[in-house]
Length: 473
Image (cartoon, rainbow, N blue to C red; front, side, top):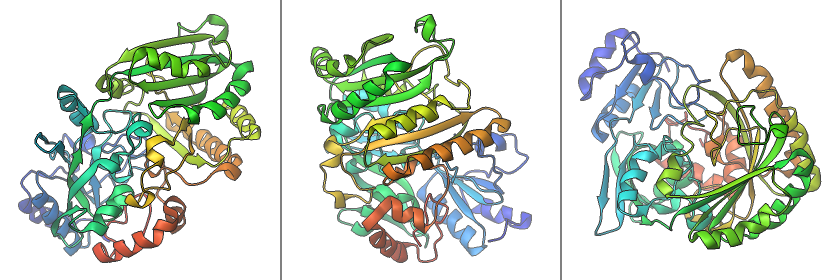
């Protein structure tokens, strides 16, 4: 497609209800920014859509004028698919309404909302929609990729709670997708949804908040890492569904004054559990994990779910570049742990934690998270998500503030991930740093790929929405 012609901008502007944001406008650089600071692209125009009709009109204009189009929901996608040089960005930010339907235990959420927009009013009502772990994550991106977070083992994925979605199709038609209307599209949206249309609103089923979140953390010395990881492997997946366990390999920042002096600036293993329910019960069920060795530091506390959802916002702040390599591990032999420890100790990056507080989520070179629980007991064909079974989610993560740091970090992440190749299965599409092709799509969606490709042919035969994370055409 060609870039937008200046002479046609006024025509586009006349079709929508809000003024366009154009290069040179005072708000342009803020409006084009996305979460991953490594993404620095300059769209030809930004359309601030205030309704599904705005979306449909702008989309049709782009297609009629052979202009590339991208869609920004929350702008939190690692690969930065929301923005493209010389394209028109359809910004959903004004579609930020949240409306509860109390008689039906439902909530309708605009396609431009962040999860904090939902979590706060939901907490006031004592309810929750299971989501991620950072409040400025976009509702659209997380949901359309499946949606994993603190509550996944206990309650399942975000997509499991989607009841319907309003979607602008490539034809410009506005439809409702649900189990009863456009059921094939509805299924595809729940895990592979970046490929089929523009979702302007989501209606979710909500459930009562399952009690307070009990957070427990400990750091173990370098010499104890292997033995604690071995215990983690044998224990964490057998814990109750109410417990999610994280194992992280990192070096202690020198400004973490809570950690005893001999361990600052040294490699450690962090174990964190998040349990929902009674505080005493939490201590009992998680205690075995924290007796695997003598911690060098530990803490535990109880916090409302809504506060936990905001606890790591600074840790995953805007303005930092990221490159991640995520995979679901099919096995965790000792040899894999030895590789993890070796590469984590060779991490070439700097400490970028936001402050001296030790958050329940943190930027670190390597993390393993328990899957399973309720998330693996749903009908696997009920969503288009990656195969859902008892498996370990592993993330190699690099983060930087200066462009000169990037090349060495990316090379390290790629080499580390390659070394884990024999243990890797699929991946979580929301943690993908690079847009993929059919090969990645087949890896992510497995035997669901052919069904997804067939739905794609019905709803987007010309592959208008090819700027998603993978290409299903």
